[in-house]
Length: 298
Image: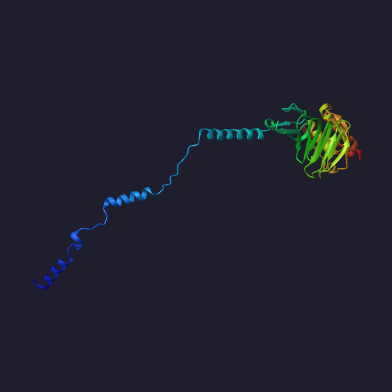
Protein backbone atom coordinates (compact mmCIF):
# COMPACT_ATOMS: atom_id res chain seq x y z
CA UNK A 1 0.00 0.00 0.00
CA UNK A 2 1.33 3.34 -0.96
CA UNK A 3 1.94 6.11 1.53
CA UNK A 4 -0.80 8.24 -0.02
CA UNK A 5 -3.41 5.50 0.35
CA UNK A 6 -2.35 4.79 3.90
CA UNK A 7 -2.70 8.53 4.75
CA UNK A 8 -6.22 8.70 3.24
CA UNK A 9 -7.45 5.68 5.22
CA UNK A 10 -6.17 7.14 8.46
CA UNK A 11 -8.08 10.38 7.76
CA UNK A 12 -11.35 8.48 7.06
CA UNK A 13 -11.03 6.59 10.31
CA UNK A 14 -10.43 9.78 12.22
CA UNK A 15 -13.41 11.55 10.58
CA UNK A 16 -15.98 8.80 11.16
CA UNK A 17 -19.72 9.51 12.03
CA UNK A 18 -20.24 12.79 13.95
CA UNK A 19 -22.75 11.03 16.24
CA UNK A 20 -19.96 8.70 17.39
CA UNK A 21 -18.59 11.60 19.44
CA UNK A 22 -21.69 11.41 21.71
CA UNK A 23 -22.18 8.61 24.18
CA UNK A 24 -23.57 5.56 22.54
CA UNK A 25 -24.08 7.54 19.34
CA UNK A 26 -27.22 9.15 20.85
CA UNK A 27 -28.12 12.67 22.06
CA UNK A 28 -28.63 12.68 25.79
CA UNK A 29 -31.69 14.92 26.84
CA UNK A 30 -31.89 16.11 30.42
CA UNK A 31 -35.77 16.23 30.24
CA UNK A 32 -38.33 14.03 28.60
CA UNK A 33 -40.73 15.19 25.89
CA UNK A 34 -43.70 14.79 28.19
CA UNK A 35 -42.09 17.14 30.72
CA UNK A 36 -41.46 19.80 28.06
CA UNK A 37 -45.06 19.70 26.80
CA UNK A 38 -46.36 19.91 30.34
CA UNK A 39 -44.37 23.12 30.90
CA UNK A 40 -45.65 24.66 27.64
CA UNK A 41 -49.27 23.94 28.54
CA UNK A 42 -48.77 25.38 32.00
CA UNK A 43 -47.26 28.57 30.55
CA UNK A 44 -50.15 29.02 28.10
CA UNK A 45 -52.84 28.50 30.71
CA UNK A 46 -51.23 31.12 32.96
CA UNK A 47 -51.63 33.92 30.41
CA UNK A 48 -54.91 35.80 29.72
CA UNK A 49 -56.02 35.78 26.12
CA UNK A 50 -57.87 38.98 25.15
CA UNK A 51 -60.74 38.48 22.76
CA UNK A 52 -62.82 41.31 21.21
CA UNK A 53 -66.43 40.24 21.23
CA UNK A 54 -69.38 41.93 19.37
CA UNK A 55 -72.41 42.49 21.48
CA UNK A 56 -75.62 42.69 19.54
CA UNK A 57 -77.72 45.72 20.54
CA UNK A 58 -80.72 44.93 22.64
CA UNK A 59 -84.13 45.26 21.03
CA UNK A 60 -85.08 48.31 23.11
CA UNK A 61 -81.90 50.09 22.02
CA UNK A 62 -82.69 49.51 18.36
CA UNK A 63 -86.27 50.69 18.86
CA UNK A 64 -85.12 53.85 20.63
CA UNK A 65 -82.66 54.67 17.84
CA UNK A 66 -85.37 54.14 15.21
CA UNK A 67 -87.81 56.36 17.15
CA UNK A 68 -85.22 59.15 17.41
CA UNK A 69 -84.55 58.96 13.67
CA UNK A 70 -88.26 59.11 12.84
CA UNK A 71 -88.80 62.03 15.24
CA UNK A 72 -85.88 63.94 13.73
CA UNK A 73 -87.20 63.38 10.21
CA UNK A 74 -90.71 64.53 11.14
CA UNK A 75 -89.39 67.61 12.94
CA UNK A 76 -87.22 68.54 9.96
CA UNK A 77 -90.16 68.26 7.56
CA UNK A 78 -92.40 70.30 9.87
CA UNK A 79 -89.79 73.03 10.32
CA UNK A 80 -88.73 73.52 6.71
CA UNK A 81 -91.84 72.70 4.68
CA UNK A 82 -93.26 76.01 3.45
CA UNK A 83 -96.19 77.25 1.43
CA UNK A 84 -95.82 80.21 -0.93
CA UNK A 85 -98.68 82.23 -2.42
CA UNK A 86 -98.04 84.61 -5.32
CA UNK A 87 -100.60 87.17 -6.44
CA UNK A 88 -100.23 88.10 -10.10
CA UNK A 89 -100.69 91.48 -11.78
CA UNK A 90 -104.17 92.83 -11.25
CA UNK A 91 -105.07 90.06 -8.81
CA UNK A 92 -105.99 89.92 -5.13
CA UNK A 93 -105.44 86.72 -3.15
CA UNK A 94 -107.07 85.64 0.11
CA UNK A 95 -105.10 83.36 2.47
CA UNK A 96 -106.44 81.79 5.65
CA UNK A 97 -103.68 80.68 8.04
CA UNK A 98 -103.91 77.59 10.32
CA UNK A 99 -105.00 79.64 13.38
CA UNK A 100 -107.74 81.50 11.50
CA UNK A 101 -105.67 84.61 10.81
CA UNK A 102 -106.16 85.95 7.29
CA UNK A 103 -104.09 87.76 4.70
CA UNK A 104 -105.31 89.74 1.70
CA UNK A 105 -102.48 89.88 -0.81
CA UNK A 106 -102.27 92.81 -3.23
CA UNK A 107 -101.20 92.52 -6.88
CA UNK A 108 -97.67 91.30 -7.62
CA UNK A 109 -97.05 90.34 -4.01
CA UNK A 110 -95.73 87.16 -2.41
CA UNK A 111 -96.20 85.63 1.02
CA UNK A 112 -94.79 82.39 2.46
CA UNK A 113 -95.12 80.56 5.79
CA UNK A 114 -94.56 77.16 7.46
CA UNK A 115 -98.01 75.55 7.97
CA UNK A 116 -96.75 72.48 9.89
CA UNK A 117 -94.68 74.64 12.25
CA UNK A 118 -97.36 77.31 12.68
CA UNK A 119 -98.42 76.63 16.26
CA UNK A 120 -94.78 76.69 17.38
CA UNK A 121 -93.92 79.91 15.56
CA UNK A 122 -96.43 82.19 13.82
CA UNK A 123 -94.25 83.84 11.19
CA UNK A 124 -94.72 84.86 7.56
CA UNK A 125 -92.46 86.43 4.95
CA UNK A 126 -93.85 89.18 2.73
CA UNK A 127 -92.72 90.88 -0.44
CA UNK A 128 -95.17 93.44 -1.78
CA UNK A 129 -98.31 94.62 0.00
CA UNK A 130 -100.80 92.80 2.21
CA UNK A 131 -103.53 93.37 4.77
CA UNK A 132 -103.35 91.23 7.92
CA UNK A 133 -106.18 90.26 10.26
CA UNK A 134 -104.43 88.41 13.08
CA UNK A 135 -106.23 86.04 15.46
CA UNK A 136 -105.36 86.30 19.14
CA UNK A 137 -102.55 84.07 20.31
CA UNK A 138 -98.79 84.17 20.69
CA UNK A 139 -96.44 86.45 18.80
CA UNK A 140 -97.18 86.92 15.12
CA UNK A 141 -94.30 88.16 12.97
CA UNK A 142 -94.17 89.50 9.44
CA UNK A 143 -90.64 89.54 8.00
CA UNK A 144 -89.89 91.79 5.03
CA UNK A 145 -86.17 91.72 4.27
CA UNK A 146 -84.82 94.46 6.56
CA UNK A 147 -87.87 94.90 8.80
CA UNK A 148 -90.01 92.87 11.20
CA UNK A 149 -93.54 93.72 12.33
CA UNK A 150 -94.70 91.84 15.45
CA UNK A 151 -98.19 91.69 16.96
CA UNK A 152 -100.38 89.45 19.10
CA UNK A 153 -103.87 90.08 17.75
CA UNK A 154 -104.76 93.04 15.53
CA UNK A 155 -105.25 94.23 11.94
CA UNK A 156 -102.74 96.21 9.93
CA UNK A 157 -101.42 96.89 6.45
CA UNK A 158 -97.82 96.44 5.28
CA UNK A 159 -96.35 97.88 2.09
CA UNK A 160 -92.91 96.48 1.28
CA UNK A 161 -91.60 97.03 -2.24
CA UNK A 162 -87.97 97.63 -3.16
CA UNK A 163 -86.66 100.39 -0.84
CA UNK A 164 -90.07 101.35 0.56
CA UNK A 165 -91.58 100.04 3.78
CA UNK A 166 -94.76 101.28 5.44
CA UNK A 167 -96.92 99.88 8.24
CA UNK A 168 -100.39 101.21 9.08
CA UNK A 169 -102.18 99.96 12.20
CA UNK A 170 -105.99 99.75 12.09
CA UNK A 171 -106.72 97.90 15.36
CA UNK A 172 -104.73 96.99 18.46
CA UNK A 173 -101.03 97.78 18.31
CA UNK A 174 -97.96 96.65 16.38
CA UNK A 175 -94.23 96.86 16.97
CA UNK A 176 -92.01 97.57 13.97
CA UNK A 177 -88.29 96.77 14.15
CA UNK A 178 -85.51 97.75 11.79
CA UNK A 179 -82.76 95.18 11.22
CA UNK A 180 -80.65 97.95 9.68
CA UNK A 181 -80.56 100.32 12.66
CA UNK A 182 -81.93 98.21 15.52
CA UNK A 183 -84.60 100.87 16.16
CA UNK A 184 -88.06 99.76 17.34
CA UNK A 185 -91.31 101.69 17.41
CA UNK A 186 -94.85 100.83 18.58
CA UNK A 187 -97.93 101.91 16.64
CA UNK A 188 -101.50 102.08 17.90
CA UNK A 189 -104.71 102.22 15.91
CA UNK A 190 -104.75 105.12 13.46
CA UNK A 191 -100.97 105.48 13.18
CA UNK A 192 -98.63 104.73 10.31
CA UNK A 193 -94.87 104.52 10.12
CA UNK A 194 -92.68 105.02 7.06
CA UNK A 195 -89.16 103.63 7.08
CA UNK A 196 -86.21 105.41 5.52
CA UNK A 197 -83.40 103.71 3.65
CA UNK A 198 -81.20 104.09 6.74
CA UNK A 199 -83.71 102.22 8.91
CA UNK A 200 -85.19 105.24 10.69
CA UNK A 201 -88.94 105.69 11.13
CA UNK A 202 -91.20 108.60 10.25
CA UNK A 203 -94.52 108.47 12.11
CA UNK A 204 -97.75 110.03 10.91
CA UNK A 205 -101.47 109.82 11.60
CA UNK A 206 -103.29 107.64 9.10
CA UNK A 207 -106.89 108.20 10.24
CA UNK A 208 -107.75 104.56 10.85
CA UNK A 209 -105.55 103.29 8.03
CA UNK A 210 -108.47 103.89 5.66
CA UNK A 211 -106.28 105.02 2.80
CA UNK A 212 -103.63 102.36 3.39
CA UNK A 213 -106.19 99.57 2.98
CA UNK A 214 -108.26 101.21 0.25
CA UNK A 215 -106.63 99.01 -2.38
CA UNK A 216 -108.77 96.13 -1.10
CA UNK A 217 -111.82 98.13 -2.22
CA UNK A 218 -110.22 98.85 -5.59
CA UNK A 219 -109.31 102.47 -4.83
CA UNK A 220 -105.73 103.75 -4.82
CA UNK A 221 -104.70 106.84 -2.87
CA UNK A 222 -101.39 108.67 -3.24
CA UNK A 223 -100.14 111.45 -0.98
CA UNK A 224 -96.99 113.23 -2.20
CA UNK A 225 -95.94 110.00 -3.88
CA UNK A 226 -93.03 109.97 -6.33
CA UNK A 227 -94.34 109.88 -9.87
CA UNK A 228 -92.28 106.79 -10.64
CA UNK A 229 -93.98 104.97 -7.72
CA UNK A 230 -97.42 105.92 -9.05
CA UNK A 231 -96.63 104.46 -12.46
CA UNK A 232 -95.22 101.33 -10.82
CA UNK A 233 -98.46 100.79 -8.92
CA UNK A 234 -100.46 101.25 -12.12
CA UNK A 235 -98.28 98.53 -13.67
CA UNK A 236 -99.04 96.22 -10.76
CA UNK A 237 -102.80 96.77 -10.87
CA UNK A 238 -103.36 96.62 -14.63
CA UNK A 239 -100.65 94.14 -15.57
CA UNK A 240 -98.98 96.41 -18.11
CA UNK A 241 -95.51 97.80 -18.75
CA UNK A 242 -94.98 101.57 -18.42
CA UNK A 243 -91.78 103.00 -19.87
CA UNK A 244 -90.97 106.43 -18.43
CA UNK A 245 -88.73 108.90 -20.26
CA UNK A 246 -85.43 109.22 -18.39
CA UNK A 247 -85.91 112.97 -17.93
CA UNK A 248 -89.21 112.41 -16.15
CA UNK A 249 -88.06 109.37 -14.21
CA UNK A 250 -84.97 111.16 -12.92
CA UNK A 251 -86.90 114.02 -11.34
CA UNK A 252 -87.50 112.76 -7.78
CA UNK A 253 -89.04 116.08 -6.74
CA UNK A 254 -92.10 115.48 -8.89
CA UNK A 255 -94.80 113.99 -6.65
CA UNK A 256 -98.44 113.10 -7.13
CA UNK A 257 -101.37 113.47 -4.75
CA UNK A 258 -104.69 111.99 -5.76
CA UNK A 259 -106.52 108.73 -6.24
CA UNK A 260 -108.14 106.58 -8.88
CA UNK A 261 -110.51 103.62 -8.84
CA UNK A 262 -109.31 100.46 -10.49
CA UNK A 263 -112.61 100.20 -12.35
CA UNK A 264 -111.41 103.02 -14.61
CA UNK A 265 -109.76 102.21 -17.93
CA UNK A 266 -105.98 102.36 -17.80
CA UNK A 267 -105.96 105.10 -20.45
CA UNK A 268 -108.19 107.24 -18.24
CA UNK A 269 -105.91 106.66 -15.25
CA UNK A 270 -102.75 107.53 -17.19
CA UNK A 271 -104.36 110.70 -18.49
CA UNK A 272 -105.41 111.64 -14.94
CA UNK A 273 -101.82 111.30 -13.73
CA UNK A 274 -100.04 112.80 -16.73
CA UNK A 275 -101.96 116.02 -17.46
CA UNK A 276 -100.95 117.96 -14.28
CA UNK A 277 -97.25 117.48 -15.10
CA UNK A 278 -97.26 118.42 -18.79
CA UNK A 279 -96.54 114.89 -19.92
CA UNK A 280 -98.47 112.39 -22.01
CA UNK A 281 -98.55 108.70 -22.80
CA UNK A 282 -98.57 106.71 -26.00
CA UNK A 283 -99.12 103.01 -26.54
CA UNK A 284 -96.04 101.45 -28.11
CA UNK A 285 -97.18 97.82 -28.07
CA UNK A 286 -99.65 95.36 -26.63
CA UNK A 287 -99.85 96.22 -22.92
CA UNK A 288 -96.89 98.64 -23.22
CA UNK A 289 -97.22 102.41 -22.61
CA UNK A 290 -94.56 105.09 -22.88
CA UNK A 291 -94.59 108.30 -20.83
CA UNK A 292 -93.00 111.23 -22.69
CA UNK A 293 -93.00 115.06 -22.42
CA UNK A 294 -96.00 116.77 -23.98
CA UNK A 295 -94.33 119.28 -26.30
CA UNK A 296 -97.64 120.92 -27.11
CA UNK A 297 -97.81 122.32 -23.58
CA UNK A 298 -94.37 123.95 -23.63
